[in-house]
Length: 488
Image (tube, rainbow, N blue to C red; front, side):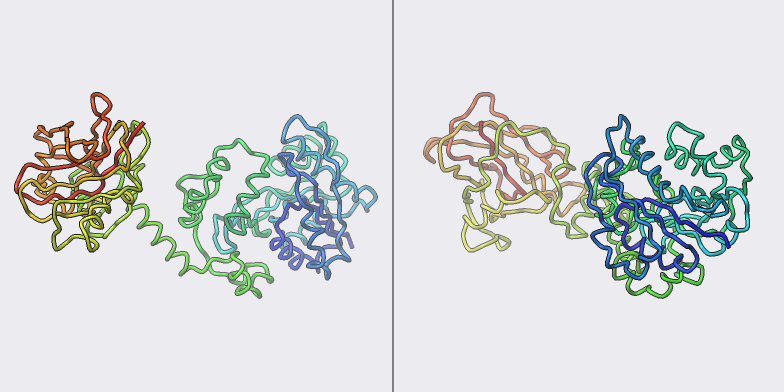
């Protein structure tokens, strides 16, 4: 009976390796596992198999371990990978000519049907596998074609077809039919249902580790997936690897899966290798709502309703959903002139209203200096003639910029709430006795805020002041979202 040698490189896929060994232990004669001291990109790496050898004790009698200690110097990333792949040939030099050799990655697991076909066929055989990503139960399609088997008698022809043996082994994954034709090796085209390709398993951290070690380091998709938030989004949606918009599907774990997976579903789910579809749906719901918020944030300057927001205007949506935190990056504002000096100061106001925060005017007014704008009011005076708000900067300093985010909510087409600031004036003072008006609003346009239209005042010349006072000359209430003062 022909012997079967299962040959692959190992990086850190401990769970996948355990799955492979369990699935194939009764069918193969030897597992040839190559483990290098460097990643394909040349970074030093741990010998994960050696460190976890006790986990695989029951399989050790069939394991031939190839310790790839010195990788040498390589001009290209690919050259290092070719070298590493070539090293797993060393234990195969003296095996029988009718031996079957499997060349695959550790996460490409052939099934027993494929091995029977490989033993029966005298030549090279391509294998077509079911293709899964991120989770064992997330199916891309049934059309993964790369791993292959070859009889030992033809191995020398293949390994000498390129300038290095490892290069031939690797390139044959994607063009074994061409090699077979050129080298006069009998060829069996890709057989269906030959196993399972489980790629990019183990969660975000494991995937990022794999991408960091990847030979295709400059490719668009691996580069983009270095962004953890983007990667999490791709996992939650189920976007196909190497794609931006192709979707994959969850499938039930049934009799078509490796027996080890069938028998250990709860454990694999706990370890994050099988995704609970209800948890997946919940994650998708959360992600959808987060994307809806970002869409809203990006369109706060637009007053029309959006179908994507339930036919609400963006400002109405903010109010309806009770959203309190709006990242400033969505407001598309210019960089402030100077550094923020008001953030740890105390403010006061002319009066209190039933809606005022805290127990004093200072408690209420200081809220305008804390946090980020959200369209609501941070402080609220009573309705009176010429209400005002004032901040004490603690020291006299040059004022380079003042930003006022007006209250915009609740939103109404007439902008009644925002219009209460139409006659605003800004004063500065060194001592709270002598005040100078540095700004008077005389535009017919309302002052905005989170819609990307806050009032930004840059004094024509530097004003030396300790106090900044905001006042409206009308009989009204003064209520602002946020106020920021900057100095050089």
